[in-house]
Image (cartoon, rainbow, N blue to C red; front, top):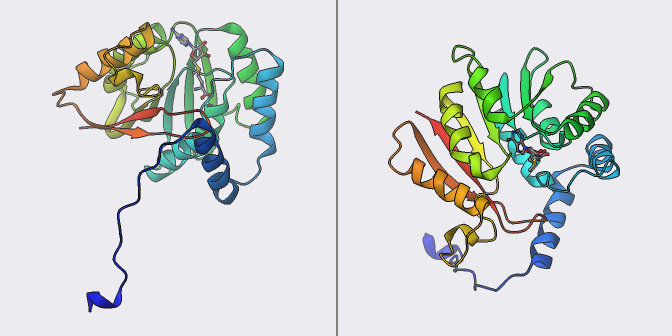
Length: 234
Ligand SMILES: C[S@@+](CC[C@H](N)C(=O)[O-])C[C@H]1O[C@@H](n2cnc3c(N)ncnc32)[C@H](O)[C@@H]1O
């Protein structure tokens, strides 16, 4: 019976470049992500206002949205708003009575995000809290749990954010942390900077942590070679 089917062979490895990843991302997105004037306008407004171009990529945004939909999230917390690009992806996954709280330290970023969320018709369910993310997190009550928490702010504080996120997420809820691979530099003993060390601190904290089950998902694409830590609260 098995003889009737061709044998699946291992793919030949090939060294890749940023151009390969960008082309691949654009190619896949052309089938899977329709043109979206609102998201494009949010990115354009962010650039016009001088915000850094460090939002999640299109496919990462879509992935976050799919995760939120998979678990039928009603409450989402985001740490690190920038111009609200990822906030729009996540906010759209929520039902009309859902709520997203996003934390941002920079007034200008928050103002641009406010405009972008308004243009996306999401202001009624997405609230920006301005201030240091950790200070804002510790003030959030433990009895109002979130279904999904996305951590994407200053990387040296990753472990502090993650520790608070464990308190705030429901059992079975998801915590996702962005930029944990950093072109492979996190695993390279020759490399060190505060962002890399922030990820290493988080990984050390996660080792043997019985509160969560976690893995790293590579997010190779238009933003380069990076990854999400994806954790489920036990
Ligand atoms: C990578 S950007 C967020 C991108 C956004 N999540 C997206 O994909 O569209 C990081 C953001 O975190 C903010 N940030 C940095 N340090 C912070 C802190 N201590 N508390 C809150 N936000 C902070 C920065 O101002 C910046 O807007």
